[in-house]
Image (tube, rainbow, N blue to C red):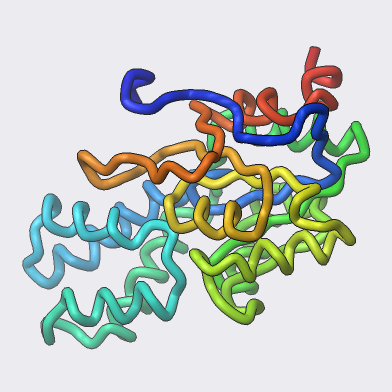
Length: 240
């Protein structure tokens, strides 16, 4: 990712503001599962005679979406080439096989989680992934132990970009969302976090080409460690 593509900077926040809680997206933000997912998606498409380039481009349009929404989009895109439910099942099977021995992390995730945990910070994951899968992957990556809770896509009243998941995540920490820092990679997720009133930082990862970031007053950072330094003096002190 080219530093010239985005304007890096801190989120808009009141002078002296400090986070009382930390809310994290999961796929593409903590876990490097979007690339694995794209690989699995391309594998299923290959069996249908759909080329890697076409499959890869369409997969990028799904990032940040919920399971119901992505399934509906995929059904339209498949246009009868395969039943959407069967496609999703095959995709999940390939993805699970690819991550059977290892769930890859994004840069600095373990370092950040250990630093925040040592400082006594309250942390939660707010993800569009269904709960069973999310908790399994977080446990496999040895991150679940750091979290107060996981707010999953099948456990909320509405999915991102609706603010409901972040409102629920903040409530689970016993906090107002305006007292929480939130971290997202996708445009869908950052809209949800900002809509809830969180002070949010976007860490762009896999995106469709020539797609500018939404201008919502969020911070923008190159990785999770850089994002934390924008909002958390606790992290700066612990990691110094």
